[in-house]
Amino acid sequence: MLALVRRIPPGRAMTYGLVAEIVAETLHRGGPRQVGQVMAGSGDRYAHLVPDGAAVVGPAQDDHHVAWWRVVNASGAPPAHHLTAALDALRAEGTPLTRDGHRVDLRRAVWFPGIEDDPQA
Image (cartoon, rainbow, N blue to C red; front, side):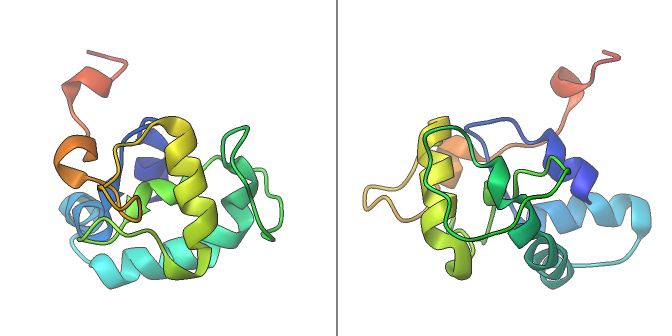
């Protein structure tokens, strides 16, 4: 699951449900809530990876490269407990947001892994 999240390019996003659907193709189990639990358990550790210029509040440093802020709920909202840091990171990457600036515009920003992102293709 984290390997998939690592592949989401800057300026793009995936939903918990989409991550779960793709991961379930391989693992044959899991769902959006499980994705949320994994991301919540790792989000604090990855907040230092917010792009330069974005404000990061609080979370500790880690060596993993997982852009946790690129995984949002079905309405495009980042995790409520890291809302400011996530929105700052999304803005810094140029991710399309809704007019109110509080959610990812999924029509323009959703990312689906495919052949074009496969280094072997």
